[in-house]
Image (cartoon, rainbow, N blue to C red; front, top):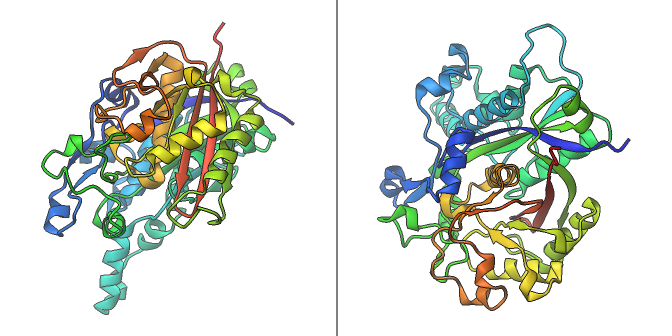
Amino acid sequence: MDNRVVITGLGVCAPNGTTVNEFSDAIKNGISGIRHQPDLEALNFSCQIAGTPLLSDERIGQYFTPLELRNLNSTGIIYGVIAGLDAWQDAGLTIENNNEPDWDSGTIFGTGTSGIDKFRWAINKIDALEIKKLGSSVVIQTMASGVSAFISGKLGLGNQVSTNSSACATGAESILMAYERIKTGQATIMLAGSTSDSGPYIWGGFDAMKVCTFKHNHDPEKGSRPMSATASGFVPGSGAGALVLESLESALARKAKIYAEVCGGHVNSGGQRGLGTMTAPNPTAVQRCIQVALKNAGIEAHEIDVINGHLTATSKDALEIENWKVALALPDDSFPYINSLKGMIGHCIAASGSIECVASILELSEGFIFPNINCEDLNPEITNLIDTKCIPQTLIHQPINILVKASFGFGDINACVIFKKYPHE
């Protein structure tokens, strides 16, 4: 079995847009979702800005029952369910309320940590000898697979239902896992995506590691500066992205809208050997991940139109560009366009890959390249490697055929996925 796999639905819950239309408009116009966070200031964080989705109680209430909403304070589950159900609906799929599960449909929906605020609340109750007050919602909100369990129950999914977790590579990896499931004939439709909680208990560890910027607390929208000479660390973010993957045969049979095709990809690890550590990438592994992804997808380096990079606004941005350049081995004058969404939304940790993949699919299907913001002062280490024209700072409208998306995460892990425009005759 070797099914072709396409994308038929998108959903997003990002700091600069919580619907696909709103998000699409924001990324085209370079609109930032990074704002000052009073709670981080009150807690004496060095970085007091972050990207968080803006959701009203009314909007949240459209996705959860009143019973589910009682004591629901896992932001990651809220973001993931909204993005996931929106993607399902966008794909033209219905929710059947019969007694039989949908055996051909499943989900791989990743996360880093689930329900950390709920965890804190529960720990305080236990420490206060009030275990009987915990209620029945603690486990479902704090188990890592809570998000996929919620989504599965709402959609009646009967195929594989799982939550992957691979640090910042989680979102890209979820898409590749779902892709393999369909490609090998084990499922017809898979909802892939990832989510990340928001708040100080998620971001505190990064602040303590001094990897977050502290220089833009009074100018939040300028804080996240991928590829900039004045990049001073990443801005934390949160949210969720979701994509419906489907066999081409199924999509054509039900006359579904097809956004793009998934050609393949690769995941690997640098093993924390060589230059790789828990927090630094092994360049050899990154380069190998890119090269094997292209080989698996049957794509040549010169065919790539756009790279949607990981590019977090840290000192490692130049190294990432160097890895792309070595891996692709292209002449200087034919390096693809490269962009980073993190200038607009910050680094959404486990959700970063899936939100950035939604942006990538919009670029492919609509024919545009979103601008890189906050890098008017490009890092000279980067411009020594590639031409400045490869780093667009204004919106470009042009057809795109091949886009490569990569995510690299703590633990020296890498994921690279290749998307192709679907030819609508």
